Length: 177
Image 1 (cartoon, rainbow, N blue to C red):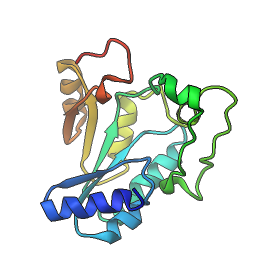
Image 2: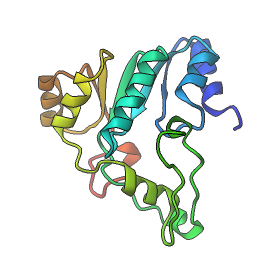
Image 3: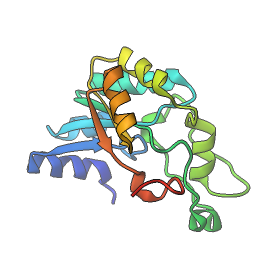
């Protein structure tokens, strides 16, 4: 839909509920923030380039987002054969424009897979979450917790909340339902 995340934010505001803006949204953090008074959280993938991750967090703070939702259950993009067959091309990620290249040229597979493999940090660990906590005053919610042990560890290092998720069950083979 042409209004995408802006329409979603307006609906969230009208419903008095929270909107979590995707890292890969087609509207920028600032465009969504200026569109209405919805309570907004920003969903973040920690990138190989930590400066870009820190820059996104800072933009969320400046734009009035109320929390960072860091996704930890997707170290790699799940294989989606239809994307590969159709050579899916990603829309431009508005939140990365001007800071890093978002156009991925791929000979095989899909654009999303190539972008994820070149940009996202698949070695994400608890020290990275501690780093994220250290660079912002915003609450940090960790999305993708699946075990009691991970929930306990998240609490021990100081996250403000957890979101139990297996990323729709389509990212990692044998992830618990």
